[in-house]
Image (cartoon, rainbow, N blue to C red; front, top):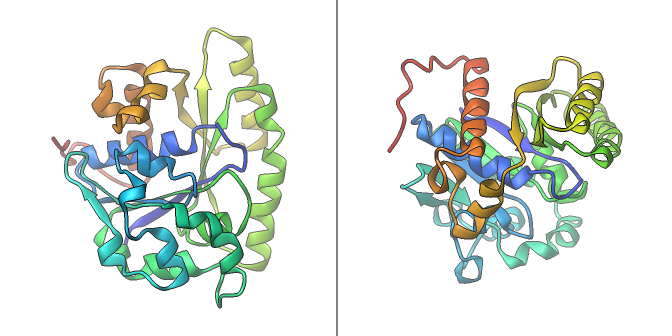
Amino acid sequence: MARTYTVVNQKGGVGKTTTSINLSAKLGEYGLRVLIVDLDPQANATASLGVERHKLNTGIYELLIGTGNVNETILHHPRYNISLIPSTVNLSGAEIELIDLPDRDKRLNNVLTPISDRYDYIIIDCPPSLGLLTLNGLIAARDGVLIPVQCEYLALEGLGQLTQTLHRIRQNLFPELTIRGVLLTMFDGRTNLSADVRAEVQKFFPEQVFESYIPRSVRLAEAPSFGMPISVYAPDSSGAKAYDALAREILLSDGYDLKTEKKHG
C-alpha cells in the first residue's frame, strides 16, 4: 500500500506545488511508483507537468463527485516516471457541491484507497486554503502531512491556524493524522532572517523540521513554465540538489535502502 502524504499550508506562495512536483519527480527517479493528486482548482501541479487542463475531459473533480472513472482519469508521464490525477476548471465549484454529498470529507480517501496498492507514494497537492478540498486532502493523508514554510517573517503567522486545524481534525475526524515533516523553502543562507525563521519553526515543531531545505532559486521558479520538474529542467541546479536531498531524507526515514534503489532514466 502506498505511503500517502499531503502537502498543505493555507498560505499561498510557500512552495506547496513546487514541492509536490519536484519531490515526486525525485522519488520517480529512484524507481518508485508515484501518483500526484492535484487538489488545487488553480491546477498548478497539472500545468507544471506540461498538461493542458483545458483539453482534459475528466479530472479530480469528477472523481470527487462520483461521476468519473479513476482508471480513465490517471495520466502517466513515462519521462518522469510519475502519474497524475489532474485538476480541471470544474474543480473551482467543488467546495459548494461537496457540502451536500455523503462522506463529503472522505471523498478523496474513498477514491484513493482502491488504487493505493499500485503505487509506492501518493503525494496530494492541496489548495492554499482550509476548506473542504483541503479537508479531503488531510483525511486522505494516511502517512502524514508535509508543511512547506517560506523563510519570511509573515510565513510564521499562519502556522498557528494550521496546527489548530490539524488538532481539530485529530479530535473529531482522523485521530491518526500526523505531521510528517516541515520543509523550509526559499531559504537564503546569506540572511539572518532565514536563520531566524528556521529557529522559530524548530521551536514550533520540535523534531519535525527536515534537515533538507529548499533554497531561493530562479531555476526553480522557471521550471513550471516549461512543464518540467527541476531535475529535468536544471538537473545540476541548487534546487534540484535540494529536492534530491529531501527525497533521500524521506526515503531513508521510510526504511528504503538507497543502495538498492535505482535511479530512473
